[in-house]
Image (cartoon, one colour):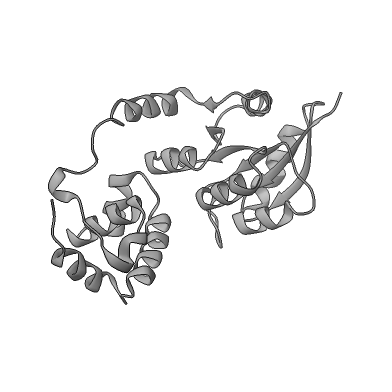
Length: 222
């Protein structure tokens, strides 16, 4: 019987060692790779592909949320479980949106982590009860518009290449919202907000968020 090949991605060596010890209790799982951040994880996949990745969220260089999207775009067959101590909504939704196959907290029992890996490997989505409840509540609100009609921005000319999400963030910036407020409103991390703003400013040939706010407020709304 082939073992489930696992990669552990966490910036703390002690956590990686602890997870390796836990997973060694199962004769059906083999840890074949480790990485200390998302970028390192992605680059190491050029050498060998695991079946399942245990992905921490908060890491230097590249966090788990960004790494999940990058990995899933290139290696969609690899299953990814977000493993973190942070039970925060924005990470849950952004991680799942980027393609994560499961989300569990580091404080669960050892046997539950092993069961979780096996479940995701078999094609199931893994969510702990408290996380599943939040996801269900969020799904109930998916049909509701995130902004009122007057918050629809018309972009013309060379600015038409802004994505809907970039337009949404631009509007919130024009309303004076901070990165933290935007991240909570859109269920994304502050790091992701910063990345979007960098792309928006580049596309609009602007230097800072103040110029962006001025530009947006000069546009006509429907």
